[in-house]
Length: 202
Image (cartoon, rainbow, N blue to C red):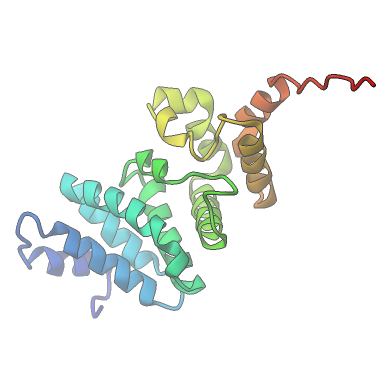
């Protein structure tokens, strides 16, 4: 916390000589410190980014923590929730962690809470603001996801298992100003078979 620049902080942390198996403790410490601040400080995102770039094990640990943190966002007050979403957005738009971690999110009315919907909103808005909406659309579009092998990990966010779930995702992203992310889902809905109503006869 006393470090002026994130590079200095990373240098001090490296000097701790963390033993194999204890890496997750450092990851948790960075996340906890990040959430304690009143507003999000990119300082913590840069620390996480640097460790992920230096050691593959941190890339894996932060990816695993994304899932466990997402499961408990309903316990967080809004300030901490926002900082957490911004932190992981930083790791994602810098490709410090694999976007496969998005498989932890199931974006349906039944599977989300108010807190998890806010988390996803901040996460995607922050990613779009930093990498550009056009680039984000290209990355997660059907073609882009196939090229980067992300398709299996996005089915929960852009579900095609039912008309209801697909519509929920489209309406959700449209309401947060990121409707362009759901172009593939809109095509799916447009091409979906219309329900057949048998006329009632007396």
